[in-house]
Length: 217
Length: 223
Image 1 (tube, rainbow over the protein chains, first blue to last red):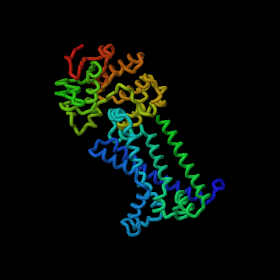
Image 2: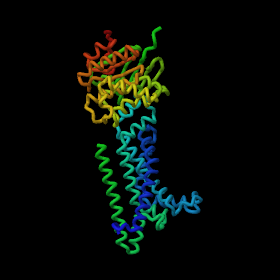
Image 3: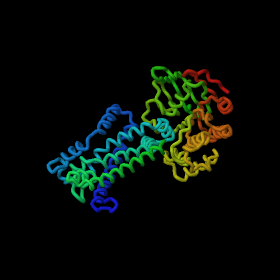
Image 4: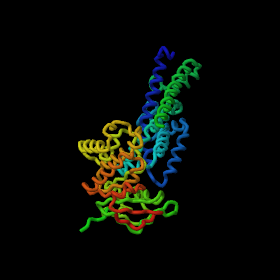
């Protein structure tokens, strides 16, 4: 089925990749600045915010799905946007899930950069923003690894995609929701083919992180 | 009328973990002079330079930078642009030599033509022209120290602070650094404060020597 490029398998694999890449990009755009700012700040509640972020890492996907569901279902505060059972709803939910991952890992990555780097940037005339960008740039491999870790988390999640996407074939069906459906119907070979694709993607993600980690060291 | 001293320090105290590491009742660094700051390890030289470069706030006291109070100032970023500190340890950004040397002028928003011209001059003067496109993290210790010097000297700020500039420098480049500092002082009137163990390097260069011991200034010895 994989080798013959079954159209249904290709459709769900492509949807999974599209949703996961979109949410990873969005979460990176939000999470990296949050993490870098947090690492660079000396605010009073910094440790407390870090603890909250670390707690959110353990948030079950189904809980995130449920929270977003209450916001976007037809009677919810954002019901008028008609997002429920659409790709946008999945991407929104996945983004909420992985923003804390990217932010927490970005904060750790930037905190590991030696303070002398920011001192050097400041004494060379850099303002606060340029200093933060310079420090983040020194941690760029670790920041990229944070994004890849977040991608690995969403490509394999099922709760958000099922609750917010509705598992609609050719529209919101992803690899994981298709596996759940096919397995419940007794279509084990289809589910297995999708599982293999998912594992291949996860393998590629791990290889990428290892190569990046080696380069950073 | 004499110009305001580059630094006018009064009742400066700094402490780590409750232990005083600097206690300077009074010290003036005259504008346009070269001062050598000497003293054993742990005497407070690097801490003093960090305070003078506005990277560290002292526990108490007053420091005027060209007549402007810098302790507790809200304009630290602007004041900092009058000072360049070259650290003892060569810390380079993980990019090319050219990008490292041009970092300061780019941060200050100098015109591209001016940046190119200054980078070319500094690289040539320090024998680094052939290394412009090399990754700065793959240089030898001596080459890295020369890049650090080029990156600091290119800013041409009125005040230059150097922390043990010869510690990682190849012997062959010491006379060159000596000449570059003297030239910056004589042609641009740069005030230079060099923290060093190397009195052979500092004595012929400095107008005055300041001795620090256990955070306290010994009597200033005029050369």
